Length: 480
Ligand code: FAD
Ligand code: NAD
Image 1 (cartoon, rainbow, N blue to C red):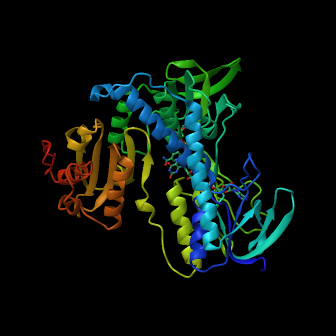
Image 2: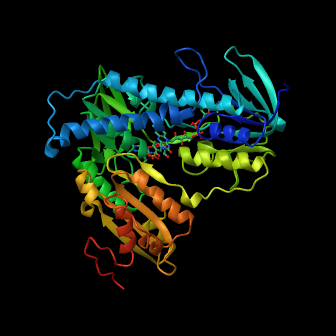
Image 3: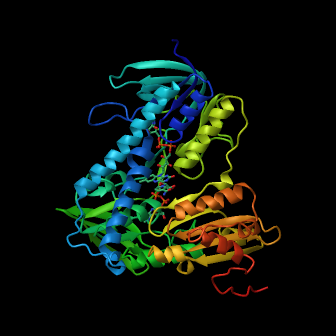
């Protein structure tokens, strides 16, 4: 077999491994280079950030900690009595690892089944679509391809006032590995990672304080939804301090002192663990030879056009390493688009219909425009909202916090934004994504029959509410 491929992919996260499987399914001779190596046995690890230290392990801990919180705080009010409920962090971590291993092993199986050649080592793009792979023994091999897809992902940002210290000042990866429930946890950044991982440890009993530099909570989220969310997080005991910029940290024994500035001046916070969750940056370290032809943009992302083409012919890039939201499903959609384009098809990713989810409880999920965006664009719109407090299924499940909010164009009634804070928001938002992909109006959803009793009836009612027709709440008269 020659070392020339139709496609070589660098990186086996949800962007790279999905592109590799799709390319092979389309009949292309495909190889995927991945450098991740297991500390346990030195073997290659597939799945990238998402499966190993991101989406999956965080969701495993969110699910387990939510069950604990339910049992600990809310079973008794529903007539269930438990005596001796305990947290066993070791067992919890074992469970998390077994889910991760099952999924990463599954990718290896899919590569085999589809005939993707897996290359273990560090990939570097040379000129003319040549890829140099350096293996564990520093042996370099150069492969050639007609097309190269870069899918090397991202790394957590470190900030000078809070340098990482193993087991004490940690990034998201370290925060998924505490071996006991810390008494006091500090989090720098009240973004998605901060809220999800802060919630895990708060539910398990830590006192959690989050320091957020901005004065607006979740600025990318519709602010009616963000305000409702903040109210519930505060009730849960998450202490979220806005307008608080961290200026320094020091460690003495087992205690971390965090210095920060807020509206009142210099403040100090003492914690046992500190999670730094201030964003992620594209991973391009030792990736591009000077003559590779690939350019970076001003923020260090690989520069691509709207179909993920770089400036070098035959070289594409997808996922966290390029512009756009850093989300696993966005990476995978781009990977599929590029594989199909290489095979001669003409698909396009619809960047207007990518859902976002924060997997807290209640879950926050949205697709499309917020009211703030539409206002700033000068668009006229109508809004329908429906609270889960008026939804029978949510009440029966003892999970009635939050609402569904649908925003539709005032003239055409086309749905422009779909927002949820509430139970199963991550699942409900798919209805908004499908509706928007199909160009639906709010009336289309209002005319649809939804099963009773379901959380989805809140989607129906919010759609009815766009034209003041909700049945199970009193409709407010809209100002003309
Ligand atoms: P990655 O998954 O980062 O994969 C890149 C791969 O490339 C890695 O395996 C890396 O080892 C490899 N690599 C890099 N350079 C080289 C090289 N030169 N040679 C060979 N291999 C190389 N997103 C969601 O949509 N939903 C979630 O619930 C969610 N939760 C998250 C929770 C956490 C704690 C974190 C940190 C992230 C989360 N994300 C979530 C974001 C998600 O993980 C990323 O958007 C996604 O992994 C990006 O996929 P990717 O393929 O672009 O990159
Ligand atoms: P983020 O951008 O969501 O939040 C970082 C927060 O840190 C911001 O609010 C920022 O204002 C704040 N911040 C920055 N510097 C600060 C400082 N010095 N002091 C105090 N606050 C500061 O980033 P993240 O939470 O690290 O997540 C990174 C990426 O990972 C996100 O873009 C997201 O797309 C992805 N992710 C997605 C999911 C999901 O889909 N559920 C989950 C986790 C991560």
